[in-house]
Image (cartoon, rainbow, N blue to C red; front, side, top):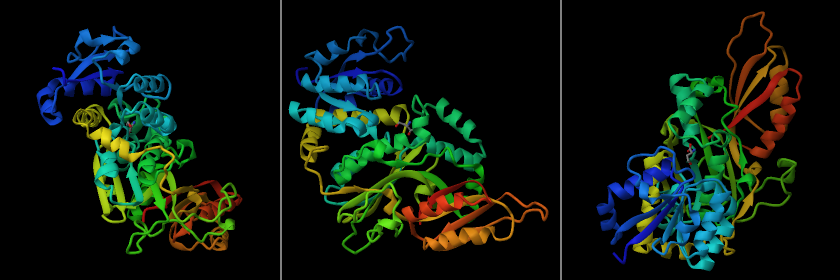
Length: 467
Ligand code: HSE
């Protein structure tokens, strides 16, 4: 058929196989939704001899990327290689050759979004990337289309399924960190290098993309402060539970923008716009907070058991978005895995076939110079309550030294837990302190001083509290 949309898949691993499966098994349904047939014309792989799912038509397989990109019967190239090496060349060459691109590659967009989107505009072609953030959860469309009337004031999100799976397994099944990670890898949630999952990098890539759509800022992933889940001890999970909290790895965007009702969105903390230079971490730039400012970070956060995000379990992702008109909305679903990711890739292909994606892409002007006036602020300005776990000598004056340092930084203590130890113990014993709101910069400065105390046996472990 002449109006058929021809597709080349470049990369046929877990997600590529899923995309082929959906396109072939549901061709009629997809043609109906798209108003025209979608045809898989070529599948480019690295190794022709690798055993593959029976659904993959052998006659479509080849190792020739250029032939796929330049095939006149192909109008869309689906890049599913991953990473920022060959994948970048494929995307740029496909655009130059006049093809639209669909990609699930968050690292590529987060690192090279400016260059790729400019190339797309030059070529008058479209880049679709629903699958790049939160797998099967339609968060890109929600932010770019459904919430288009809003200014997003804050985002709080679980964006890495592997980390969420590990934390859930540690909390609910008492699994060790290592055993839980091995299980996540076996189930196919983790990246090829799982360090990117557990150190917060994968979530930072995804947050950079959400921040571009919501605030027009081009934050490089390495500029997004991150703390992973590797430092979380089972002891922290138990203490958090005792206090009524669940630990989640959250990607957060905080703005100084308030809703028309004067609300800050979540947590009541927001950005400390009055913070003096002395309250900031020494590395932070010395300047006042801009009127339209956003702070981005990825870190473990203690959420009350009753919070909606605390109840997102296993490899599921969830994104809580605060819009100045709509208020709070929540998007939740499978954030990793073959079919959820394929679901988003095929939705992009249908949108391209209909012609919707081309219009949305042109209007959104992503990664263009026309920003929305937001500046990226250091996370030191984020106000939060903190959970602080110390290993201290069980001796007179230890607690007094610690509380004096917190008082010096104007940080007030909300609660304190020390379990009774044997009389002749002497330490070290765990001590948990929960603070009232404090700017992150001030809190970190207090931690540096606490860590220097001779009675503190190990570096302090601390996380933000989500309320
Ligand atoms: N490795 C990612 C995760 C899935 O665990 O969420 C793909 O983004």
